[in-house]
Length: 176
Image (cartoon, rainbow, N blue to C red; front, side):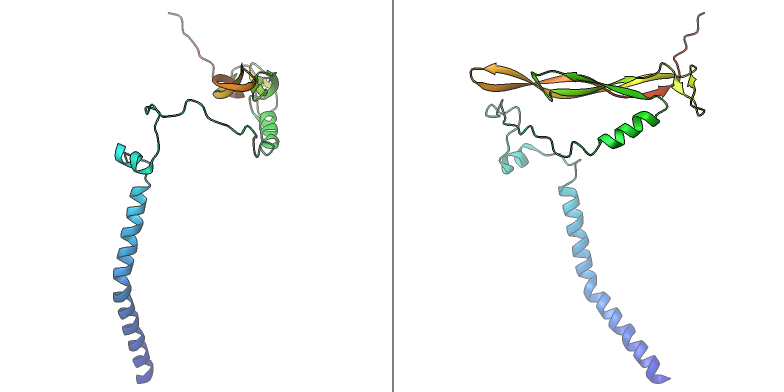
């Protein structure tokens, strides 16, 4: 019996010693993690010294470029179509797409959603006129091609695109 309790006591002492040795390292590790978290926090104010140290220009700097080179190939553009196709047909405010094509714009073709119904689809699949289908719009950036000599040039433009439809209660105005 004594040998068992002696082993347990010795193991307990070894664990206690290990905790005393590791405690300062754990504290140091936690301080380092905290410092890195604060340094990379999006709420941290980046003063001018931080920007100068990194050698980055900001838009107020007169040396900031007014033109940039852009790779216009779009990666992973085919993935979302199946999901969107399914959602637009299952929605309580279903929609279809109309393709807006402009050869002087990038992207050349933009899918613009149009609500199928003025009302919404009820759980029984019938149109419910007590609710309204309304478009959901998003402002996007497009590139407009301009000719400047032989080299193609693009100007950034904003465009409002309807991306889908949603079901809402109608606005009721009471007459007095």
